[in-house]
Length: 366
Image (tube, rainbow, N blue to C red):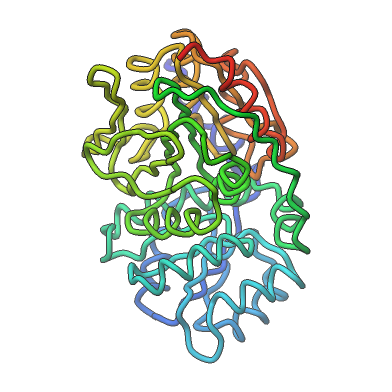
């Protein structure tokens, strides 16, 4: 007699013991509501408890159905999604995933939504993703959203916190030093906090943030308006320069390369790693190979394990490494996995990471 029926029964009982993640789908398109609902209904741990064609209907259903997570379109009649999000985060905070089209206007609104409490952003099917791709991404984002530190999200959308005094000791003038950063859920705001604290003479920075195509360009543009350093979406062959940060474009991996004393990035297609493209591990592994002890790795908030093994490879290659601490993470997944592996030299609260980077960068060998 095989053990598989027993194993299956135990897994089924465990699944029944854990409450399903209750999702409300808000979109003015009946087709999109139908697609999302049908795809999510295939998941044993997710339940679509209702749909709404606009925020006014959504408001009543939130009170009635008490969802755990909301998917929200941005462009809707009667009230736009961004206005609704702001009201929701003020009066009835919930994890919100933006599901939007790929227009320049939508990309800009999505960045504003992330700044106002949304935890994730995703393209509607038919833009960058097929229905299957969208569904695969969405279910993972819903699981991440359900695990978010809602207190942390609400805190960041309240009254603006006075910025910490900038600590900008002169960094050694060398092109050999390099900083690599990775983030996922909650990472857009975490990266904004870190990068706005970096002085104009920072070593070159390379970044992977899990985000769909086109949205990464809007994200980089927004950061560039806020930071002392230049921030832009990377292109294949771009040099990694002092005072500049390159953000991996959505749906492409970014790898560090080196030619003589020059670091540059390769932007390319390839299989998803940890279901992600770009993947933090792909970047970190290449940084370990080509920068070694000249590099500093930073792993920020996000669900899953992407970046944990890569951060360990960086450390084993002589790099300095930082992981964000649990209390300041929106989702303590990726940093937690790195810490468990012993990959982090320092575990640091978000608000102190830029200071720690500056201190550690001055001790790099480059």
